[in-house]
Image 1 (cartoon, rainbow, N blue to C red):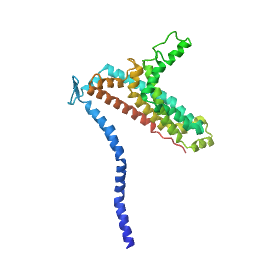
Image 2: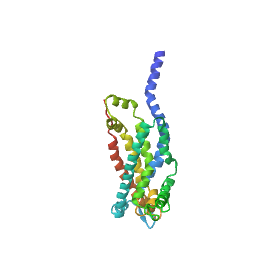
Image 3: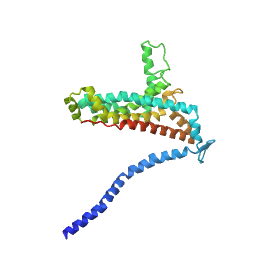
Image 4: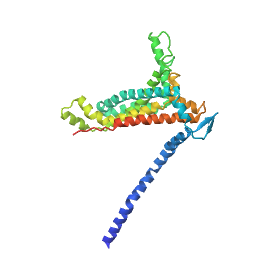
Length: 300
């Protein structure tokens, strides 16, 4: 009797166990999935649909058309700003990586018990409003700013200059500063996960610091660096606040044009088409970055 009951219990458990576990997992994940669907997927799908509608004297006409995309990709202004935005975002992401990755390596390998405190100091700017961080550069580079005051007091400049603001270089510099903490965080996380035993094994095999870095540290940390680079690029590529506050006319980026289309121009379908174009360009670039991060370290 006991054996029969046990077999029946095992049979029921085997038959209904996995579906029950799947149901529990689905229940646990449902809030996250609903959040993603409601706040990520649905708005972007609506933006995509909106980009295929037309605009007539400020009124949206819900008729399918490619007019907005044709207008965008035949516009010299759009193509110029697309190239400029891509170059600025790439420069900011590359420079932030060149700054953040060595910094993360020094923090992880050289600061010992103080590495967590040092990492938190690098991440402190993320606790400050994005708008305030951009505005701080206006205070530094403005005509009456800190840099002008220092240069005039030292006699390097006869009078305050307005050339430090409102340029492509200023936008690139500010965006680099903005994205450094994100690249640092991704790099720090990947370097922190490398076991100490691998460093010791490399030293036992006669590997110097350079060979250890090339054959162990870099291959193992490269996926994290790629993620940080991608995050930095996406943030810079879609930015409009920085270009508007410190870029002026010369530093205009596509994000500013989108803001104008949804604002003063009141041409939402065209603004949606530009937004979708930016997303597609970002996805294409990130796909290429993902290929770079797939290679894994191999050691015997």
